[in-house]
Structures are given as structure tokens and as C-alpha cells.
Amino acid sequence: MCVSKCPDKFSTYTDVQLQYQITAAPWDYYRQFCKPGFNNPTKPIAQVLRDEDCPSMIVPSRPFLQRCFPDFITQNGTLTVAKKTHFKDALDTARSVTELRDAANGITGLVDAKEVGMKIVEDYAASWNWILIGLVMALVVSLIFILLLRFTAGLLLWFTIIAVILVIAYGIWHCYLEFSLLRQQPGADVTIVDIGFQTDVMVYLQLSQTWFIFLIALGTIEASILIILIFLRRRVRVAIALLREGSKAVSYIMSTLFYPIITFLLLAVCSSYFAVTSVFLASSGDAIYKVMAAESNCMYANKTCNPETFNKTNVSTACPGAQCTFAFYGGETPYHRYLFILQLSNLLIFLWLVNFTIALGQCTLAGAFASYYWARRKPQDIPPCPLFSSFSRAIRYHTGSLAFGALILAVVQMARIILEYLDSKLKGANNVAARFVLCCLKCCFWCLERFVKFMNRNAYIMIAIYGKGFCMSARDAFCLLMRNVVRVAVLDRVTDFLLFLGKVLIAGSVGVIAFFFFTHKMPIFQEEVPTLHYYWVPLLTVIFGSYLIAHGFFSVYAMCVDTLFLCFCEDLERNDGSSEKPFLMSAGLHSILRKTDHH
Image (cartoon, rainbow, N blue to C red):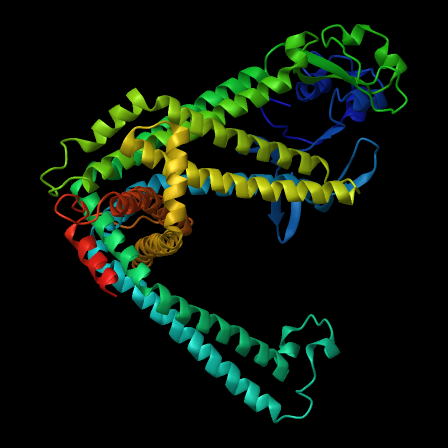
């Protein structure tokens, strides 16, 4: 109830009724806390409480966060309200202030949450410049990291591989040591099957069989890594060379690093369109009001009603406590009956637009980096404004192909959303067969979505290179990848690992620097560290924002590596390195290729 001011004294509806026979002043004060327009102090209290016309009682309160809360004051260690520790409610029952405090605890939790939210907003207002400095630092570090990958890609990868091998080797040694010690102890040769399931994990660690299983597992992993490195070391070297080449390509076409901003703006437009359309569809039609009855046997329950004339009908008499409340927006026309279908169509269009925006970005970046690869002299033969030229080609010639690929992916994603909706509806059902089939379908469509995304990405690269249609480009990309399936697997794993490592390193390093400055109160650029309520607010914001910035930069770099890889495979199949058909790859890639061919 919205009131002009909070009550400042104790009062009950019963007392006001009794006093109204003598004077109207108490009622004039009490009625301002009742429903607007209610002016019937002779109405029985049971009906007043049933219809929620007035509160049963009011207590001295004070405004806090636009709410009226009991004015609790502690005097000499005793909790009081208006200097009272006890009062009477509407039923003339004695109540204590402690009971009032317990009743207000639930609302106090909401107020505390709102207060925390206000403190977080204040912290953002006080530290926004520091957060901006941290995000700019993350942007610079991400840029430097990508540009230095041509020198550090091999070092990072081999260092990590050797570190993993050494850690697993230490694990093997430790497991063997524990296994040898436990074999000499009595009772440690009991099997895991004999002791059964135990909630205490330490029980299993006292068995020699547990450490023997760990020893076998780590030994298998160690042997697998070594065998893979022995047989695929040349593939790994080619992958490292492609990563270095991707760093060089980005350094020559620096404008590509800022293309994610355009993608973000286009996605914001798509999201705004979807939100506005969804709200308009949900609120279209007339407001429908339903009778909400307190009794289950009410004959008018869930029937439509008019709130303006509801009090003049006999519904309240037939169903005591019934109210005419808002239910939804709608109607009885065919449009309203198919409103759910329209919402699904709006969702499908939204998914289509989002996937088209992403496809446009991938095709644009692929065209820019392909122009770098196929240039005979790098960087002299790279066309001017390669990013803008590639964007223009994608918009002018490839819009249909991009839209078709985006539609296929949108349909698959729509099917996954429908399956998730059905799964949420069947959670309470006991039909195990239906749940199993639904789970299998969800798994299959998840795999299908991943495959379609992978194929679309490579199809857009072939579209940017040759300018063919989507279906033909997807077929060519699939065949090309299948002929180089080992290289694809190695490059994907190496690229994903290095980019994830880079994002974690950038976000972690910027977070550590921000933590150091905040904890030591060290000024930067003559800016003093502000005093905050929660120092984790700007710290987590800087870490999360740094990760997103690094992800935006590295998504461009990943697209560059994928494009160069397809161009590299195409170059190997189209050319043989002779004077008539020379390779168009860079000198670094050519030297790695000559070494692998020699081996």
C-alpha cells in the first residue's frame, strides 16, 4: 500500500471502530493506511481482513528504502517500539516487540539485499575509472600476446607438454611409492569390492589396490602422450607454424581485431528487436481478469470478470473473499489462440538473425585473412583495406549463402530449445521411457549443433576464398578436412589449448595487478585508490571483463588460424612447389613443410 507517511503510533481496527462512535478523528487517521476509497468503519473486522480493506493494526514505523518498518529502538539492552515492549493486536491479544521483530525478519532480508545492491552500485560509481584502466590494460596485453605468439607459440606449447609429462611422471612415482609401502602393511591388501561403498574417501587411500589402479591409469596416460608425441610431432610443428603465421597475419591486418565490436553492436540490435517483439506479443490484446476464490467450491472460480463492476455483482456474496485479479493479456480471436506459435516464430527469427550476424563476421574475417595468404609477396601484395573489401563482398555476393547456413543452424537450435522445454515439463512425470528417449534426443541434437557449427564455419571460409554457394562450399570444406583429418585434430587441440591458456593468463595477470593495487592502496596516474564497501566488486569486474576482451581478440585469431589452415591444405593440393605451380605459403611454413617432407 502506497502511503504519504508512515504511522507513528499503535492502533488497531477494533479500537478505531469503538472510538468512531464518539469521534471520527481516529478513523480519519487510520483510513489513510486502508485501500483508497474505503470509508466504512462499521464494517465487521472479519470482512475487512477477508477483503483486505484495511490492516488489522498499525505500529509506529519509520521510512527505510521507501518502506515503512517498525521503529525498533534498543534501550538499556531491551528492544522497544515507541518505548513499549508489549502491545495488543486486533484480537486484543498481548504481543511482544520480539514477535514483531521476528515477523519483520523476512522483509529485512530483502531490504538487506537491496542495501547490498546499492553499495555495489556505489562501488561501481567510485571505482569506474579504475575498472576502465584495468580493461584497457587487458586490451593492450591481449594485443601484445597475439602479436608475440609468432615467437612464443612453440615455447608455450612445448613447455606445457613437458610440464604435464613431468607432473604425470611424479604422480607415477608417488603412486608406486605408496603402493610399495602399503603392500608391507597387514590389512592393506583388502580389495575395493570387499569394503564396498564408503563415504570417507580416506578409507580407499589406505588400500594398496587403490594406488595400483592410480599407477596403471597414470602410466597409461603417460604412455599415450608419449606415443602421440612420437608419431605426431611433425603435425604439431606444422600447427605451431600456422599459429605463428596467424600472429603475423593479424599484425598486418590490425583492423580485424576490432571487428568484434561491429558483431557486438549487430547482436545488440538483434536482441533488442527480439525483446521488443516478445513484449509486444505478450502484451497484445485486452487485459483479462479472473475470479480468484478463497474457497475451492466456488462456482465463479477462474471465470472472467470486470474489476470496475465486480463489487456490484453477487460473486462476493456467493464466494466470500473472492477477488477480481489480473490474469493475462489475450482474447478469443484466432490471433490470440496462435500467440504461442507467433512467439516461437519470433524466437526462430531471433536465432536466425544472431547466427547470420556471426556468419557475416566469420566470412568477413576469412576473406581478409585469405587475401593475406594468397598474396605472393607479403605484405606488399595484400590488397588495401582487406577487411572492408571482404565485408563488402560478403554483403553484396554472399548474403544468401550466409543466411542459408544460419537458417540450418537456427532450426537445429530451435529443436534443442523445444526439447529442453519438453524436458522441463516431463520432470515430474514417472515415464522413464519418455525421459530416456528425450535425453537421447537432447544428446543427439547437441552433437548435431556442434557439427553444424563446425561445418558452417569452414563453409564460410571456402565461400570467402572461392565465392561459391553454401552447399558446394560445405561439400568442398568437408572433403578437404577429411583428407587432412589428422592435421585438423592436432591443430584444433593445439589452438584451443593455447587460446584458453592465453585467456586465463591475461585475466589472471590483470586480476593480480588489480588486487595488488587495491590491497596496497597504490595510486596510478595520480589517481588515489577509493575507499569501497566491497573490493571484490571492481576486482571481479576487471577479471571477467579482461576474459571477455581476451575472448574477443582470440576469436579473431582463431578464425585467422582456421582460414590459414584451409588455405594451407588447399595450397598443398593445388600446387606442387615447382616453378609452374609454386606454393603461396610463407617462407616459415614452407621451411617446416620441407623438413617434414624430408623426414
